[in-house]
Amino acid sequence: MKLRYDPKDLLTSLVLVFPLFLVYQVGVLFTLPVLNGADFLTVFLFHNLGLTTGAYLAYTAVVAIAFAVAVALLRRKQKFNPRLIVPVLIESAIYALTMGSLIVFVMTRVLHVSPRLAGGMIASQGLGTRFVMSLGAGVWEETIFRLGIMTGVVVLLEKVMGLGRWVAIAGGLLVSSLLFSAMHHIPPYGDPLQLGVFVFRVLAGCFFGLVYWTRGFAIAVYTHALYDIYVLLLR
Image (tube, rainbow, N blue to C red; front, side, top):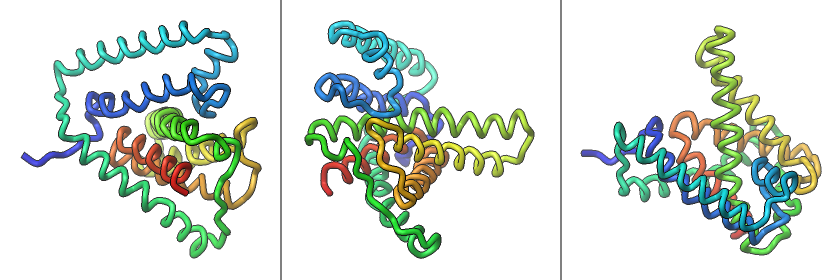
């Protein structure tokens, strides 16, 4: 039987993504006060509730237990194949390594906009902080902008407003990508607003959105995380 990742397989997505989430959630204890801009929950826990380290670890343990319960319930109808890990990583790595070149080509040859690499506060942090932030970007930004906003807009346009399927998908892709790019310019960790940086991220959001819609949440998360690791650690 051919080994294939099903984008609609919620159990597989949960099992594949949760390790990144867990490493990031524990890793932020060593990166504070630096947090991923889309990680509104952790920002709220530390900055608004003033959560202690012990209380935060207890919260993380509760989330881990909830994950285990969800996996146990989903296993009644779905089955996770551990051999999928390698194909998902390879596919995600291919997307991550080719995305930047594709976006630069579109910007220079089609849009005639000069691409700019983002800097910002995160790029000036230590190796460990940048690695943790890369994982956080993959998990939280894909959860917020693709799983949440893109899916929500598509449902709104198609199911509520009655627009065609492809129009709804295009609308969800555009709205989520614009918001995704704009979020990266919000202080204190955001980049200065420049056309080249903003357009690059809009196109990156479109790329992640297409990966999410066609290949599933887990591959979108890993593509995003691996791309950020490549940019923040290796460049």
